[in-house]
Length: 321
Image (cartoon, rainbow, N blue to C red):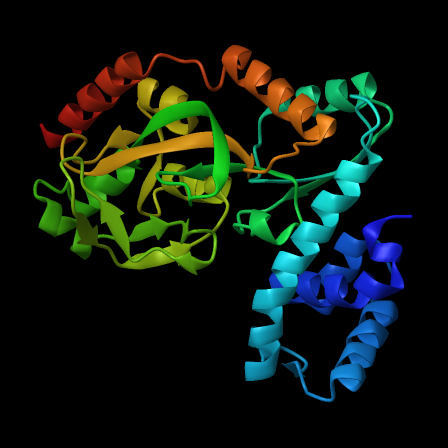
């Protein structure tokens, strides 16, 4: 019997999942149950406790004060129950059970091949892969592993680094010819910027500087999909701050040019992370090892950054002539 099948924990687990998913429909998909089941569990929990936990409308869902207090306690309880469940089930090092993984949309052919190889190698693992830029709370126990692209990672997580990469601001030569090439960081505020989402939650309002600090930007468009920002930059819609591996070929071919490459940008890392716990399930260890092995060989992640940066600088210099 899985944890979400236990009457004592199903309602609390459903409540935690609903809060984190910010949607009853999404929580139902993650739990693998019909949407009405989620609604009934939430209603039963509120009836048992005698308080309203969530205020729901057709478009929004907001925690009440009681709901916030319960969520802070319940997510820790759920994590503890899951860890206890895993520990008593461990009779050997067999790789089995449900493995919930959160990862950003990768858009990499070799990533899909790695996932296919993993489920083929471990047929007793039920893999649930959620592709989202939203930073899920691993401490709450809803997910076992996450792949994250971030400059910094929160405490309490074990991280295996997959790649470090420069972030570079790029725009098409056509856009720069039309709008002018910024020569100072402060001039970026006058340009149409194509921005991502900070922590996967809200549109970014600032971009990092190479030597530290930030500069405020005005977003023409915000998206949590780097591919969309990349396409918009290629289409001459504005300036985008993107990882070098993503724009490598376009910069080398002159389809994109670097904007203030020595001043604007920073570093990000791609890492596979999981909670720091006494017991790490064999399926978690196996998946982490598979991801690390994939990253070492993936051509999209192993290109030499200095060479790509040189292309970027040259392309940027051409637009200033």
